[in-house]
Image 1 (cartoon, rainbow, N blue to C red):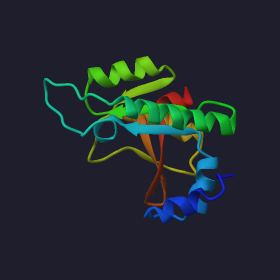
Image 2 (tube, rainbow, N blue to C red; image 1 turned 180 degrees about the vertical axis):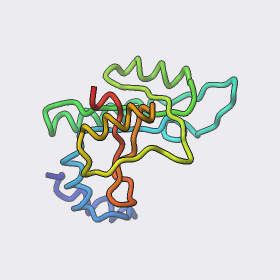
Image 3 (cartoon, rainbow, N blue to C red; image 1 turned 90 degrees about the vertical axis):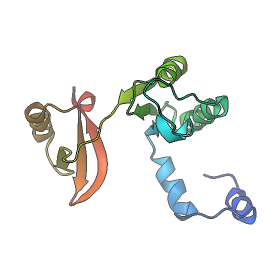
Image 4 (tube, rainbow, N blue to C red; image 1 turned 120 degrees about the vertical axis):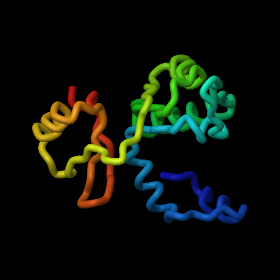
Length: 154
Protein backbone atom coordinates (compact mmCIF):
# COMPACT_ATOMS: atom_id res chain seq x y z
CA UNK A 1 0.00 0.00 0.00
CA UNK A 2 1.44 3.31 -1.06
CA UNK A 3 0.69 6.56 0.71
CA UNK A 4 -2.45 8.07 -0.89
CA UNK A 5 -1.61 10.87 -3.31
CA UNK A 6 2.14 10.11 -3.41
CA UNK A 7 2.17 9.08 -7.08
CA UNK A 8 0.16 12.16 -8.01
CA UNK A 9 2.52 14.46 -6.05
CA UNK A 10 5.52 12.92 -7.81
CA UNK A 11 4.07 13.38 -11.30
CA UNK A 12 2.70 16.88 -10.50
CA UNK A 13 6.24 17.93 -9.51
CA UNK A 14 7.47 16.85 -12.96
CA UNK A 15 8.45 13.27 -12.12
CA UNK A 16 8.02 10.61 -14.76
CA UNK A 17 7.72 6.86 -14.20
CA UNK A 18 9.57 4.82 -16.80
CA UNK A 19 7.91 1.74 -15.32
CA UNK A 20 4.27 2.23 -14.29
CA UNK A 21 3.93 3.10 -10.60
CA UNK A 22 1.60 0.16 -9.94
CA UNK A 23 4.19 -2.26 -11.35
CA UNK A 24 6.95 -0.71 -9.20
CA UNK A 25 4.79 -0.96 -6.08
CA UNK A 26 4.12 -4.64 -6.78
CA UNK A 27 7.81 -5.39 -7.38
CA UNK A 28 8.92 -3.54 -4.24
CA UNK A 29 6.45 -5.56 -2.18
CA UNK A 30 8.43 -8.66 -3.20
CA UNK A 31 11.89 -7.13 -2.64
CA UNK A 32 14.12 -9.32 -0.45
CA UNK A 33 17.54 -7.87 -1.26
CA UNK A 34 19.13 -4.52 -2.05
CA UNK A 35 22.39 -4.44 -4.04
CA UNK A 36 24.35 -1.23 -4.60
CA UNK A 37 27.27 -0.62 -6.94
CA UNK A 38 29.73 1.44 -4.87
CA UNK A 39 31.34 3.19 -7.83
CA UNK A 40 28.79 5.67 -9.10
CA UNK A 41 26.03 5.20 -6.51
CA UNK A 42 27.72 6.34 -3.31
CA UNK A 43 30.12 8.65 -5.12
CA UNK A 44 30.85 10.18 -8.52
CA UNK A 45 32.55 7.01 -9.73
CA UNK A 46 36.02 8.54 -9.92
CA UNK A 47 38.81 6.03 -9.47
CA UNK A 48 42.54 6.08 -9.09
CA UNK A 49 44.99 3.34 -8.29
CA UNK A 50 46.06 5.13 -5.11
CA UNK A 51 42.83 6.85 -4.09
CA UNK A 52 39.71 5.76 -2.31
CA UNK A 53 36.19 6.79 -3.32
CA UNK A 54 34.38 8.51 -0.46
CA UNK A 55 30.67 8.69 0.25
CA UNK A 56 28.20 11.24 1.55
CA UNK A 57 26.19 10.81 4.74
CA UNK A 58 23.04 11.44 2.70
CA UNK A 59 23.80 8.19 0.85
CA UNK A 60 24.18 6.36 4.15
CA UNK A 61 20.89 7.71 5.45
CA UNK A 62 19.16 6.94 2.16
CA UNK A 63 20.23 3.30 2.25
CA UNK A 64 19.24 3.01 5.90
CA UNK A 65 15.82 4.54 5.27
CA UNK A 66 15.28 2.15 2.35
CA UNK A 67 16.26 -0.83 4.51
CA UNK A 68 14.09 0.44 7.38
CA UNK A 69 11.08 0.85 5.09
CA UNK A 70 11.47 -2.69 3.79
CA UNK A 71 11.86 -3.98 7.35
CA UNK A 72 8.68 -2.18 8.43
CA UNK A 73 6.75 -3.63 5.51
CA UNK A 74 8.15 -7.18 5.60
CA UNK A 75 9.18 -7.70 9.21
CA UNK A 76 12.79 -8.57 8.35
CA UNK A 77 15.81 -6.69 7.09
CA UNK A 78 16.57 -7.27 3.43
CA UNK A 79 19.89 -8.80 2.46
CA UNK A 80 22.03 -5.78 1.56
CA UNK A 81 25.20 -5.88 -0.50
CA UNK A 82 27.64 -3.40 -1.97
CA UNK A 83 29.66 -4.46 -4.99
CA UNK A 84 32.82 -2.82 -6.21
CA UNK A 85 35.62 -3.63 -8.62
CA UNK A 86 38.24 -2.09 -6.34
CA UNK A 87 39.66 -2.71 -2.87
CA UNK A 88 38.22 0.57 -1.68
CA UNK A 89 38.90 1.46 1.96
CA UNK A 90 35.86 3.74 2.12
CA UNK A 91 33.56 1.00 0.83
CA UNK A 92 35.00 -1.50 3.31
CA UNK A 93 34.65 0.97 6.18
CA UNK A 94 31.09 1.86 5.16
CA UNK A 95 29.97 -1.78 4.98
CA UNK A 96 31.54 -2.51 8.39
CA UNK A 97 30.00 0.60 9.94
CA UNK A 98 26.51 -0.18 8.68
CA UNK A 99 26.66 -3.80 9.90
CA UNK A 100 24.41 -6.34 8.15
CA UNK A 101 25.91 -5.32 4.78
CA UNK A 102 28.10 -7.47 2.62
CA UNK A 103 30.88 -6.06 0.48
CA UNK A 104 31.88 -8.06 -2.58
CA UNK A 105 34.66 -7.22 -5.00
CA UNK A 106 33.57 -8.25 -8.45
CA UNK A 107 35.35 -8.64 -11.71
CA UNK A 108 33.98 -8.96 -15.20
CA UNK A 109 34.52 -11.67 -17.75
CA UNK A 110 33.98 -11.71 -21.49
CA UNK A 111 32.56 -15.22 -21.00
CA UNK A 112 30.64 -15.25 -17.72
CA UNK A 113 29.50 -18.58 -16.34
CA UNK A 114 25.73 -18.91 -16.64
CA UNK A 115 22.96 -21.36 -15.92
CA UNK A 116 19.32 -21.70 -16.93
CA UNK A 117 16.71 -20.48 -14.44
CA UNK A 118 15.05 -23.89 -14.52
CA UNK A 119 18.26 -25.82 -13.74
CA UNK A 120 18.45 -27.95 -10.62
CA UNK A 121 20.48 -26.91 -7.59
CA UNK A 122 22.62 -30.01 -8.18
CA UNK A 123 23.55 -28.62 -11.63
CA UNK A 124 24.45 -25.23 -10.14
CA UNK A 125 26.75 -26.83 -7.55
CA UNK A 126 28.44 -28.86 -10.29
CA UNK A 127 28.91 -25.70 -12.36
CA UNK A 128 30.49 -23.89 -9.38
CA UNK A 129 32.87 -26.80 -8.87
CA UNK A 130 33.92 -27.16 -12.50
CA UNK A 131 34.30 -23.45 -13.27
CA UNK A 132 35.91 -22.37 -9.96
CA UNK A 133 33.88 -19.12 -9.89
CA UNK A 134 31.97 -17.52 -7.01
CA UNK A 135 29.09 -16.15 -9.08
CA UNK A 136 26.92 -17.57 -11.85
CA UNK A 137 24.56 -15.51 -14.03
CA UNK A 138 21.01 -16.95 -14.11
CA UNK A 139 19.36 -16.83 -17.55
CA UNK A 140 15.80 -17.06 -18.81
CA UNK A 141 16.60 -18.06 -22.36
CA UNK A 142 19.20 -15.45 -23.34
CA UNK A 143 18.03 -12.84 -20.81
CA UNK A 144 19.96 -12.43 -17.53
CA UNK A 145 17.45 -12.47 -14.68
CA UNK A 146 19.59 -12.99 -11.61
CA UNK A 147 22.86 -13.87 -9.98
CA UNK A 148 23.58 -17.03 -8.01
CA UNK A 149 26.44 -16.70 -5.54
CA UNK A 150 28.32 -19.67 -4.11
CA UNK A 151 27.23 -18.54 -0.64
CA UNK A 152 23.61 -19.01 -1.72
CA UNK A 153 24.18 -22.77 -1.93
CA UNK A 154 26.64 -23.39 0.91
